[in-house]
Image 1 (cartoon, one colour):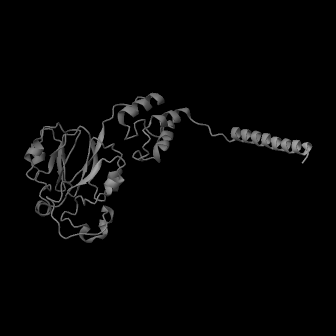
Image 2 (tube, helix red, strand yellow):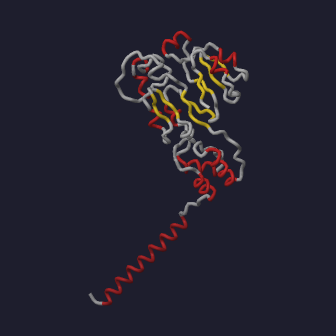
Image 3 (tube, rainbow, N blue to C red):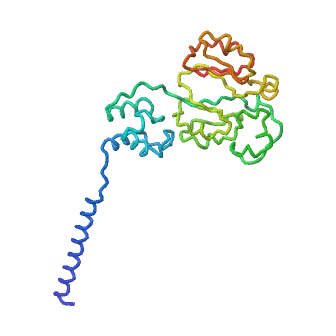
Length: 266
């Protein structure tokens, strides 16, 4: 191969390279996606857990929604108030003062308190219990099944099964709501972190039936409601509940509960 052929080949390669470079450069300009600076700033402020607790497909989805004004600046349950304040400054709005929330399991029916009607040795998943006789081996068909489906869903290692019952570590919980969504018995709810007392039962059976199923079942007697000085307790469908906005943390409800269905959590 002579020198002329080499120079011609090199020239062709160089020309092709220049053409491709120019083509890609022009294509990049033409098809460039405009990036919202606020959206990028919001995304950088979010914790990056991508847990979906906000209702969006990860942190990027939430950042886009906040930047467009479709979601509040405090929509991230993991980041809480500190992150909301940072995002509020980015968006130029007042983030407000939101309360820190944590998940709470409304059941105490562990292996010592809840009665069992048969031995179960099947798949360890609470969601399939609707296909199992009586909805599971526990006599209380409205209580925690204890197979840890909520544990598997929690991205923060904040919930564990202890002695056959799910228990939340409130200091690890980020209130993402994944455990709430997956519980087939609807026993988990978000309550303020500062809550002092809560009803640890969701059984709506009449007293005699509830007592046969679990030693600490709420029997709907109403003593907690009658003795609450703040009017924070009510009884519906034979089960008590506490309005945490009204609760003053005096503990009168717990002291008067004959079945110890109300627990101190503060």
